[in-house]
Length: 407
Image (cartoon, rainbow, N blue to C red):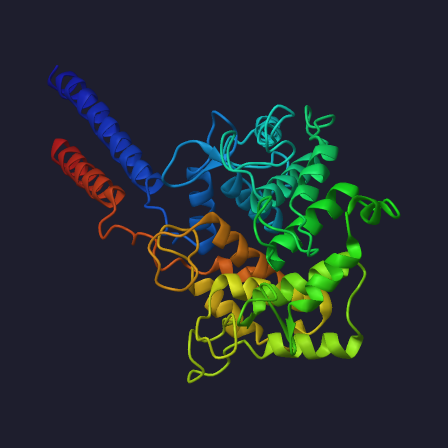
């Protein structure tokens, strides 16, 4: 009788012990599963991508400026050009963020002025923005980048009025032969490059088409030549200083017109550009970047981009100190994830980021984007998962202790 009673009393104690042990094991397994994730610092590429995604306009399908929520021409072209250089544009699906190619190309098409507008044929910064050479150049490049993704349903068949583009470009050619930013303005060599590049992009490889559309090709060539000063070019014949940007624009314009100077002259010109890189710490400006003019001490990302672009096309890029240039470019990333013209900028621009990424691509240094971003927030000193694990272990310890006491 007494033995039966003792046996019956042991049964619930054994069940309690088993239950307690099971709870302890479950809690221990849970604590293992809840191990804190290793801290993965944000890279410069991550910061740039986050900045791009944050400026996407889901309503119109383009990208907006930090000061506005509405899509704009310049940041949209810059973002798509960056994603193209980073080999993201051709991925399927192409983006992590919900970009819509069809919506974006329709936004781009809507930037072109129709026949009832005074600026018929050109493209604006927005549907109501000013039309000029720069905005037209960006929009046409953007349209062709997007339309090249014709494997995406809805892209094929989208078109801009190419004849109207060419007609508007011709309204900006001056009697001197150069092209202006807007009709009636004075010509400058960068606007001339934008105009010729746009016309060349629209016409493609049609033989003789460029000559047929330009009002006076000979005058254009002569005007560009009149901007030359020694081994470089000025913004216009009346400008006082030659610079990297007009020199690059001049050579690329003459290349489109198939009117380049002799090989020895091109060598002298590219040597002049190469000499604008600051390669020593006592050279003034930021080490590694290109200054705009002789001893101007204004190294910046824009001048560096134009220098590398022209050197890539006409030889001489092998003479660039790639590591110094890449260091300057990468250090010019702004705190917000975009790019400034120089290091130490808090808020940058997507177009400067385009200059930077294209430059890094030209010198084969895109891997530097995998560096840890020094501006990314540091990991928390105390992970909440650690607190959770400590709590779980405490509960497990108490449960184990109670199960032993029950025994």
